[in-house]
Amino acid sequence: MDKAGCEARIKDAFTKQVQSDPKVRSAFLLVRSDKLGVDMNIAESGNGSLAHVDQPNHLASVGKLFTATLIAKLYEQGKLDFADKIGAYLDVELMKGLHVYRGHDYSSEITIRHLLMQTSGLFDVFYSLWEKMMADPSFTITTREAITWGKEHMKAVAEPGRKHHYTDTNYYLLGFIVESITGKPFHEAMHEMIFDPLGMTHSWMHGFSTPKEQPDQPVAGLFMKDIDFSSVAGAPAIDHAGGSVIAPLSEYLLFLKGLTNHQIIGKETLDRMINDDVHMGFPTVGFDYGYSIWKFRSIPLLMPPNLYSWGCVGVTGAFMFFHPGTESHIIGTYNNFAYRGKALNFMAGKIIKELIAQEQGASFGE
Image (cartoon, rainbow, N blue to C red; front, side, top):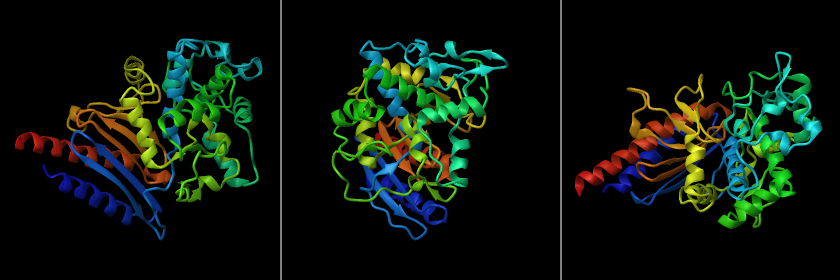
């Protein structure tokens, strides 16, 4: 079994990609497969920056899977059902005029499942508010105010349940549902229900909490159009339950293993999160989407079935996936807005293919 060779080929390809692109300031990759004996945790410096494997990373929308898992835990505790209308948990003012499409108010028809699957048809405030923050660095807003701003300045895109439309607004609302049920701020629920039980002591919610233990290394920069997201005063509000988790990759691994080992939620619930899905459509034609879970679709010649894996994606070139065939946990980030597509191509086209080749080589040698 050429485990060392497999790891060396993945590392060499990752290093070359980082070093060849001046947009990448720092990049991180963790690959763990107990089945194959592969154990990698590497940091690559780029464009004059330094990187260390223990640096906490903000994996952007990968945090949505943490939010969906909180909702799933509340489901298992009997405190909600995925089919529940969200109006049962959110206040009248927040619900008022939330979803108006072609003159009809569909607000009362939105379910928790719609939010989880990104099929509510609601508007997405994230990018519009990000542009406002770039134009005026002093501009700040709360998450609740962001939704109100969206109701006043944006339009719904479809009736609930009719179309997959990815929007952070759905996950802000899920965060408020968690608060409504637990009676605690979202970040406190995250620490108490996920971080603490899993031993994620160096993890926290951007702009809302602090880690139980301060990490030895600084947070890696997260760049969107050459602006470090963490330096923008109003950024936490448009992050919130849509993706504000910050942690070293080793602690993201604790979370992902907690899911795959059914330590956080049961197998039946996880299977539902994965398999109750919808096709994402253009431009992400190669994916189906469950409860914040992306799944590779089999496409003849382009995406063979053995590449199937599931996980979550961040727009800044972040990914956190499990490949069942090789029982591999794959987590990484390029920390740059321009890298979502490139990151997924590298993960599937290089990492997973190398792991499959390693498994097949081992099988042939036995």
